[in-house]
Length: 336
View 1 (cartoon, one colour):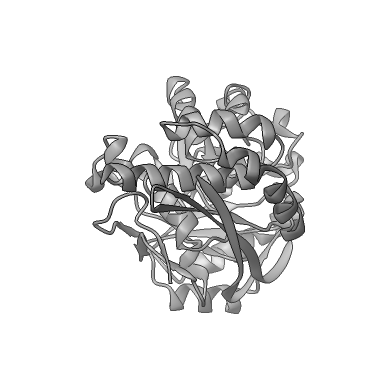
View 2: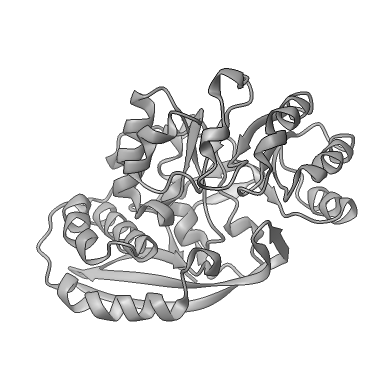
């Protein structure tokens, strides 16, 4: 087995603003796993506010690539078990290698990954489209340019409730609210009740990590679940999140790939939690990987590649919320 990587800059169609800051691009690493003449692909995006840098990804890749190239594995889970101790604390790179292994494995078997996992295409939820935080005019323009049935609205404080009310007057689309941990615990339930009446079907990570004990599930509406994102990174976080949240948002780079994501889904469902499949700013390599798990989710947010002006890859397409799979084995992704 041979592991290599390439890097590129993902340019966004619009400046993207969340509570952690604004950006116009993300650098990304595409990992290629080659074995028996077959190539598999995975992706690790640079997210500085999570401590992920391009230099750090390259350094860690060069540290482990030679050792992992000699690994003996028959199933992707086997390679993950070998790689995880060497990449503990480096979930983005671990995810890229794991997804590349699943892509390779599917191609080797001549089947799609969702086929190997015995899923049906017709059961995928509709994806949301993210509207970065901005002025009313900016956010309205982005919504007009992307007429999707569900929008994830990024907010940065409780003062933004008036903004949501104004946006609601312009569209009948479902709203999902993502505060990225920026709201004040003292006012949360007052604001939560207001949002319930604005056709909002979930609220994602309203409070900062460490403030979860200010949430009271007995006060939550079943129609507006509160979903953990930053508070739930991997399988070990699922059970504790049940105390405060109604569901969890799984991201492959956050948890370390398809292999641990499957375990998170199993644990969440056994506890009665809703499960959401999310993404970072990613090319079609990363989006294709998560899309193959979409039949297992209650909600999906797979718009990462749709937000780009220069996607360097192809594969699964998310068209106005509908997930369209190519009829190819593995993850179905390819580099242009």
